[in-house]
Image (cartoon, rainbow, N blue to C red):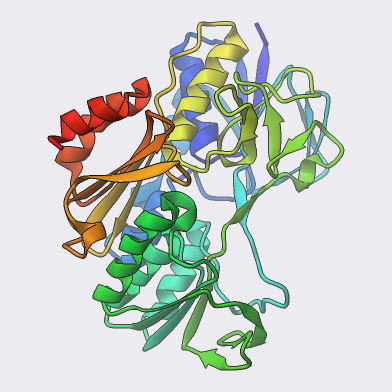
Length: 395
């Protein structure tokens, strides 16, 4: 049983690890280190309610100073971790925090493009969201580089505010990484049906300035504001020389223990956990995955039985509907329509797709059909057969 747990990263993963440690009865010291001066906050609302001006920053706080004090947590906010030596964490102000167990929960930082100017926006932090919200206030046009879930949510918010939006995506369809190519076609329809100009298969070669980009064909495009949303990289530069890397994240076993480092665990977007089914390390950049990992790591630190993890669940609010996925939906041997007719040219809303690997259901994606979607979560967890899934769908 460790006497002092140091949690590096004060986002969702860090806070939920702390909460689970206390819930499991841990009475030792806990220090929570965070690079931002803000109290820990939730990130999904940044591209939704915060960007739209529906919520103010205090609505997204996970635990304020009083609540953290009630948990008996010592905080070091506004100072980044710069090194890890054994289980001693070095900080940017020259101080150190020595524990006998360390949980890495530093998350990710936005990827940038070569030559990207400072004036081009990214969206990861609360400060980013507020800056983009301020920029969209007087803007008449917005150019978004990257058509993933974040890009789609920002496009939706801007279009609702009357801003003319253009999205540039290098892949053949938007949201392909999360949905795969077939469901990505439905995502593309949501963009265009909402009046968003979408250009897929478009390569960016550079920036003329913070508001103007140059394309591979030599044309230039400008807007009042530019958002670069091309994914994120694990925030692990402070760990250079420590542990192993896989898929860009800190390589861990299936319990979250960092490989090559004693008494170090990792959770959330920065962690690449071993996936016994895929026989590979996998980095799951999802809210619910982070919750499951935080619970597992807290239990493992204390030597308690690990809770059973559910299949990865993801949601995104886009263009007046909730897109939900469960399980593996980025790639599959076969994608079948379970409900709706979106793939046949009918309405996107109400479409539910099943992803099959071999004969087993490996994932489901739903477009504005939460009541139908809930039927399939247990079937994904069980790897149900194609015939059983189609029978559930009435097909």
